[in-house]
Length: 489
Image (cartoon, rainbow, N blue to C red; front, side, top):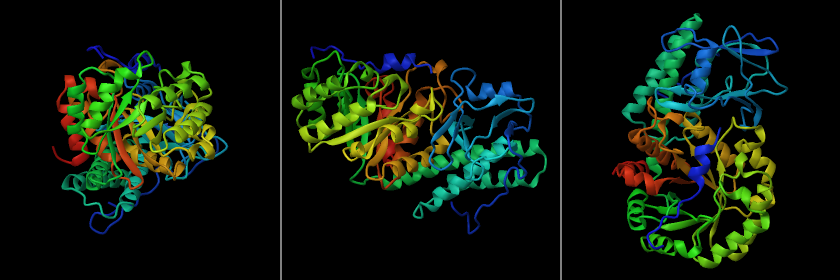
């Protein structure tokens, strides 16, 4: 390598993308936010934590985080998260509204709590919206979020909640009771937002605490990403500390040769790390014809016959990859299965609902482009998530379970995580009510790594993208990942 740096192209692309069940023995039950509906338009009323009505302009400002992000609202199937319509919300004198469509639909959007932005899915008690009416947004969102939290707890009968979880859960319950007891929309909106804040705290605690209890399973792939060949010794050392079931994704830059990565791959293996090879990143996939795509894998498989896994497609549903990705994946999966039968075959999807068009939405794309013949050649399906684009947050459990439903014969997990860039002015915030800083970045790593562990059908994952660079500038990030996967450092 001669001391030179081989850096993936993803940074250049992404910088330019425009784009529990019980407390004691009493279960939670609450009334619906509204009861009488007439066909046509669903109008949402918005209130802040003080009960003040929010104008449509103020709500828009919240949705796009003061213009640092973008409106990501969409109508989705409340059961399988199929994207049905992009940006349905429009301004009214009362707030924001959408027109009902030919099937029941939930509203998905990015919404903040004191814990940060989430993909928030408002699904009207699970049945979606089929008719028109007026809905108190934060109250209904809190009802739906609390209902899903109760279901998530029921699915984890061995979960031992912490005192912190019980405090947040009790506060959520009390706020919802306050909201339900009032007939005033402003009071319902106020306590709805307060309940949503506590639901988010309780949800994150449940996911991380249960994930920690699942740590140690032999099936876990706790990973980091090496997108540069610089500082290999330090990065390998940091990776072995961060991920006790260590995997690394090795990103092979298109301008480099396989020999440029020999030292890094050998060093990772020598340290006891398993390696996931990525010959083609999402930022470069559009420039490869199908034959060139497969040939690229042939070159790297010949160079590294002992690779533990191959990523046959990265963030494959991103609009920037263009058309034909389904065929490229099918051909590559078939080739890798024959040429490297001992290696795992991995596919990474990009998490997004509201995006350029429904065809690029995560589950829409998978259902349209991955037939059974292709799926049968894939061992692991991972989900890439960047918190300044579409943070999962309160929807994490729903998303992971739907991914398993979609791919019941594959292990699932997180395959890419982090912030696109250190430019905090151009990002959604998550975990903390401040723009991304080193401390909030650590908190994101800690939460998402731990949450990913809590699924018997999963591999965990993580694969923090800028691990090599970020841990050099912030050594404590290594410890935050370690704490996320072990519960202690």
